[in-house]
Amino acid sequence: MSDPNAKPTAPPSWRRRLRLSLIATLAILLVGAGVAAFTQGNAFGRMGWHGHGMWNDPARIDEGVERMVKHLAIEIDATPEQQEKLIVLAKAAAKDLLPLRQKMRTAGQDATALLTAATIDRAAIEQLRAARLRSIQQASTRVSELLADAAEVLTVEQRKDLADRVAEHRKHRDDR
Image 1 (cartoon, rainbow, N blue to C red):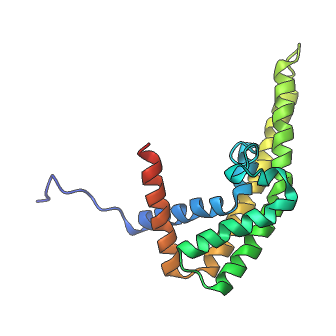
Image 2 (cartoon, rainbow, N blue to C red; image 1 turned 45 degrees about the vertical axis):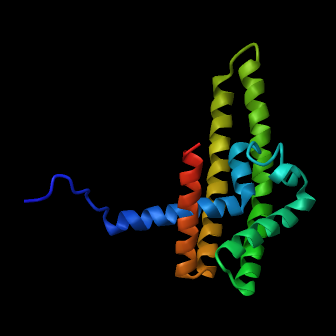
Image 3 (cartoon, rainbow, N blue to C red; image 1 turned 90 degrees about the horizontal axis):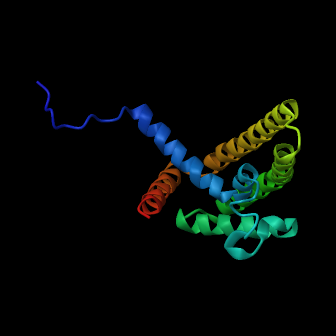
């Protein structure tokens, strides 16, 4: 007979998926441009990373991405070689995502224009929605590529440490 007070344990595949999703979350932070592409720049675009306007100034993106990767690398004890590989990957992803961010920002302005027009054009709204979904899909695909590439650079222990840090960050964020 089983103990009615015992908590069921999660199957290993569930834990593995949770760990991967936690790693994915932090990696997205690593490429803040990915977040900006999804949110039309609301996360980093208006105020910038720590108020520096990094995502509004393409010339400063490399500098900001490098700073974020170095911070992350210190946290997970990455080697200098790993750090350099991660910087290259993150800079490439940020540059790929920047045009998508602009596309999403323009789509937001277009949506406002369509919804405030004297006559509502449902076909144009649907076309805009479909275009936004394509942009989101492109950004999501690029971020997924980055995640897989970054995971290959890190050791299993580093990925686990990263997942633990993301879980801790979420715990503190959810306590607010």
